[in-house]
Image (cartoon, rainbow, N blue to C red; front, side, top):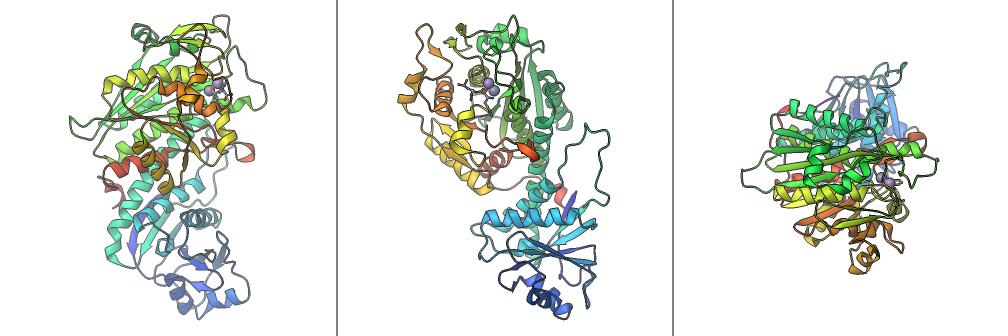
Length: 507
Ligand code: BES
Ligand code: MN
Ligand code: ZN
């Protein structure tokens, strides 16, 4: 779908559909007011007769509006009664509009939704959010269906309208970042949704190489098993033992900043299928463990979005990738392995494999002399117990970094919630036979997992996002969400002063 920005009056713009908001009980937005006047009061009449629902996110499509209106249709989106709108309501409104358009037969639309007031959010944010919500509404993953039915008349072009020409730069900025973030999320979702037989560690490495093909600013290196052996990555290699698929350690280096600017390092858990290994999982919903590489997918998505925008920063993405399967040669409960850091680990549960591959990646990250390191992982079922599917778990050894990430989550509406990293939890990792065990002893599974990682992240500012709850949806809407690409992008955009360096595609 293409997006562009323009100025114009709602009644005078030609096209398949014009989109406006109406709040409860009967408050017309400025563009809706113009349409009402030009249609001899049609909107107010429909409100009076109860044919327009003003509840937040309800849509009403009006065909062939009366009077002198140039568009073929009007889509009225209910905005509820809160003024200004909350960020959440605005996203709901933008998404309802896109869903209604997608089924309306209109292949293009001019949306005036960005004129709505949203609490603590500027026009750039609204434009970016409108783009993301629209792209989400039309997202499909049907590459693997032989009779995939594409919508007959898909929405192809969305114009975001402003009343004032002075607003165009902000709209274009928002469109550029919104499109890049949506592209990054689509990449992440596509990888997440791909089944484990296709999305293998080698396949992830290929997908990373494709980023290098696309962007001269991205350099990809893939370490093979023998390289990992040389580096002493005994924890990562222990997990890979049970798999016939060779493990890969993928690094993507994006240089958009100065030569001496320390990079942000993102590490994504890339377990392309997690059966639990010898500590095998129960069968129910085990298919969903193909999503256990969603951390990795979010790193690829973020690197891709940053490269697309040409942000003036240095960024390194690291993806340790392997399967976790049972096999005669698989690692076993009780095995003790030596990590790249030299610390020994007693593997009490082979299903706590994420931390084993991440700890070696955390040690490997030191060589990039990072400013900060953020790992992203579908790490613990306990995180779903604590926070459900709403927020990512956030744990950090640096409160300033934690605050920046919390704020980025709040702003992008891809929220995270902090949990404590107290010593008391760390003590639960005690092993009788090695430097530490790979599982904790007394509840708080998300925190003990992070405490384990923290032991390998002592040399830099570090944060951990547990995305077990947010990375995918189960049930009828089963599928990858692309989270937390929006949070990560907001965090990185803020570091560059908030705006995209290269908004060429929004012109
Ligand atoms: N990938 C899982 C975590 C997970 C489980 C995410 C279910 C989303 C849904 C992880 O590798 C795992 O198995 N963790 C164990 C840790 C335990 C053995 C200490 C868990 O959460 O049960
Ligand atoms: Mn596991
Ligand atoms: Zn796992």
